[in-house]
Image (tube, protein in one colour):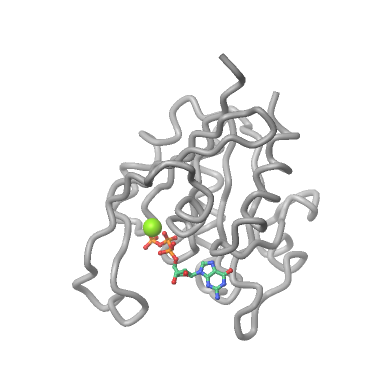
Length: 171
Ligand SMILES: Nc1nc2c(ncn2[C@@H]2O[C@H](COP(=O)(O)OP(=O)(O)OP(=O)(O)O)[C@@H](O)[C@H]2O)c(=O)[nH]1
Ligand SMILES: [Mg+2]
């Protein structure tokens, strides 16, 4: 059997986690998106309530991608999904400064004491008033700043590039 890698794809509400996994997965994604019924319905129609699961093989390595919910009320899933993870991707909506504090908290909690390899993925760089990756690194206290990489979660090549970079950080 070839090498496998369990990656947790996490981040605050609307960061692009489900899109990221849907864009790259070679199998039909297992998804748990449900209609939003509260105020957040202004932002979009559906949100992840439990997990997303997808798979992709890149450079001979099979990635198991586990996406978390973003909303804090589903946070009980974060620890369940990050059990025995090999690496972490923290997606951050570059156009939503108000989400940076939550993102920072999620990273601290999921990376835990194990000091998991991680990258911060700055989505929506094409959006209005997008905060550049270096500024996101400063806001989240990420060292070195090169750990924050731009990505369009809707674009296959862009997602692939992130996973290739992550693969180099994992044994
Ligand atoms: N313009 C633009 N839109 C993006 C980009 N990445 C993701 N999106 C869009 O962002 C929206 C939210 O994406 P989702 O994948 O639902 O976000 P999520 O993180 O799974 O959200 P929750 O599960 O609700 O926490 C979707 O409309 C995506 O198409 C990007 O780089 N640029
Ligand atoms: Mg989602």
